[in-house]
Every structure is written in C-alpha cells, then in structure tokens.
Length: 131
Image (cartoon, rainbow, N blue to C red; front, side, top):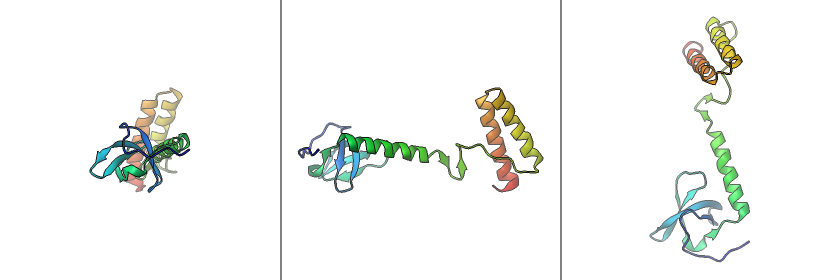
C-alpha cells in the first residue's frame, strides 16, 4: 500500500520514514525537517517531510511489537535481572534465612514481603559474595 506524499500530518500520526526504514509519530515540521518520535517513546529524529508516508497497518504493528520488545528488554537493571529471584548461595546461613523468608511470603501470597526478601538477598550477596 503506497500513499501519496504529503508534508502535513496531524501530530501523533504514525508515518514511515523510508530513509531510516522506521515508523515514528509525527511531531511537527521544524525548518526543513519533520520531527518524528519512535513508537513507544525515545529520542526524536529528523526526516525529509516530502518522503514521509502514512504507515501501513503492517508497519504500525511491527513498530508496536518492536517497542514492546524493547520495553521487555529494559526489565533488567544493570546486572540485576529483576524478572528472576536471586538464588541463595549454598552453605551460606544468611542466604538460607532470607530464602526461608521469601518462601514464607510466597506461601502467604504476600508479594510485598517476597520482593523485600529478594532485595535483602541481593544486598547480602553483593556485600558478602561479590555477585
């Protein structure tokens, strides 16, 4: 599906930039450039307004999936994978105690206490086990 070129879009319209092969939300024209923001947010980029086309449904879907995947990839903070609980070190009494607190919180369906135990275990492991 090819649409006719236009240099005027409503702000927020998803357009395809053929030079970068990216879909972005049209922001405005500034000087000789159209300003586009990535789907899902991020740093704007400049594009030639005459080359922009309204994004096809396939392009919009692809851009949305890419943004969701990028958000999922940011679920890790530095070296911490916050999606997985920390594992206690074998033979460490403190690790075993905190792991027991976590299991008790899980048994009571207390997500807040479970998260607290994860934080305690990560802090302990950084301080004592250099992980």
